[in-house]
Image 1: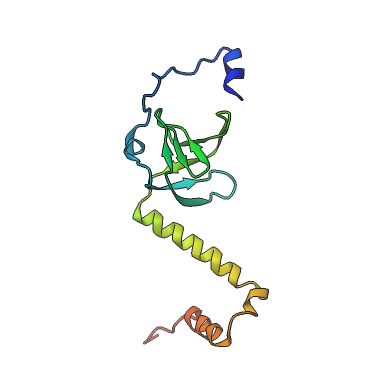
Image 2 (image 1 turned 90 degrees about the horizontal axis):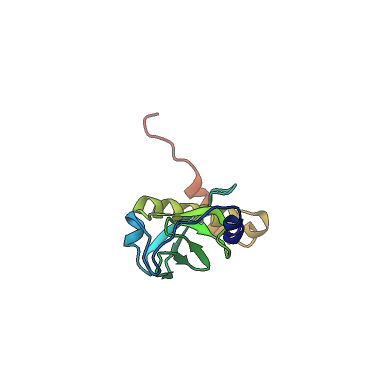
Length: 138
């Protein structure tokens, strides 16, 4: 629902002084270039680590081509909310996101058509690496 339609139905958006940064908590400390987790709350629950590219005077956060309001929720071109939000990037989240990316890349490489392109020595190493080791004394 667009802002104009809401106003016609009697809803009034809270007024904020022009140019006042509305961010709170950890979002207030964000700077251009900082890494953030962009979490998609849609069906897949995907996460990406991206960098903040711009922060508006009112506290909207621009990450690439995505815009988030001062609360960290994703907005569309007309202020519509989409499933998605910003989350603080922690070392654990960075490792988890990197792991997901590596799994996706490995899964793509394990497709039968791409396995044919991998040299035999590399396949041998992959099998060895992925084969569980027997525990000593078991």
